[in-house]
Image 1 (cartoon, rainbow, N blue to C red):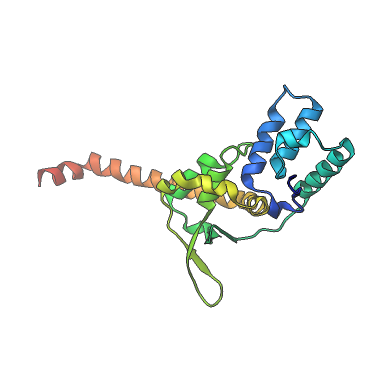
Image 2: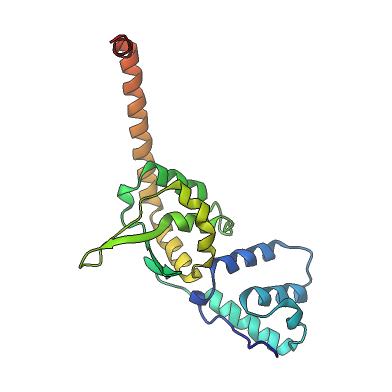
Length: 210
């Protein structure tokens, strides 16, 4: 019995993991155009590679066009989504992020346009389980824990629409993040200067003797 073809109609029906696989496919230089197209269809539909051999070229072209249309749609920022029964919320206030969050975000943020290999890890930092909400829909999310990155593979199944919307919003925060970087650096520098000042004045020595 042939499987019924399931095609994505919008980014909400494409996962981050599928897009990561597609990005890796684009990098391959060993495939003919026909082989590339069949691999692409395999990634974004429920068809197996061996089953695509029986698809007529005209139908294959229509399938590829619909995939491209879905990938090309623009989306709005969505600050909450549900996956496996858990509701996740985007960091509600970047002014209050911790040093650990800041360092992790800088480690996993994309370095160029097609840098999506670690995108699921970045998403697991930006989106965390919602733990409370008030009557005005203001919410709080789970505190950041670097250990949670071990489970970031789950985020490969999040909708690409949420990822793209979050990235657009995130890029608009770049100037704000640069301000946070400067503030964080200055605070750390001030702590070090104060520490060195105490040591030079003999305060540290006196504390040890006491």
